Image 1: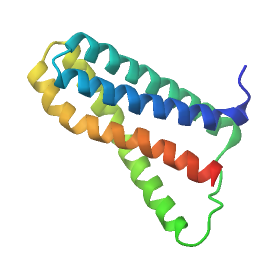
Image 2: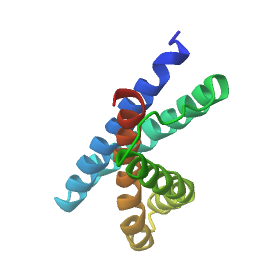
Image 3: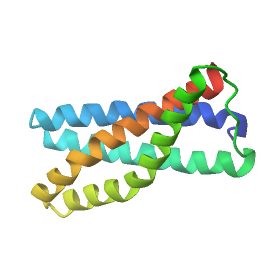
Image 4: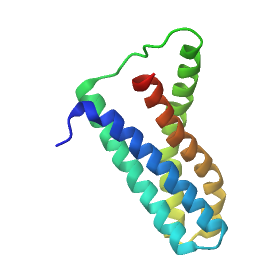
Length: 138
C-alpha cells in the first residue's frame, strides 16, 4: 500500500504521464494513425482518472498544504493554481463529451470539441506538475 505522504508525488507523475500521452495522441492523429491516437487518448483518460482518485484520497486524509513561498513567487503560484483549478472543473465534462463523441463515431463533432478539450487538458496536466513542484519541491 502506498503511504498517503507519497500521493502528491504519484499525482505529479500521473499528471506528467497524462501530458505525454496527450501529446503523443495528438501527434498520432495529425499523422493519420487513428488506432494509436485512440489507444493513447484512452490511456490519458485512464491515467487522469487514476490521478483524480489519488488526489481525492490524499486530500480526504491529509487535507491541504499551505504554500510556503514568499515574495514574487507567491502571486505566480496562486495564478497558476487558480487557473488550474477553474479549468479542471471544466475539463471533466469536456473530456467525457469528447470521448463519447469519438466512441459514437461522431468524428466531426468530436473534432470540434477536441479543439477545446486538448489544450485545456494539456494545460491542466502540465500545471498540475508545476503546482506540485512549487508546493513540495521549492
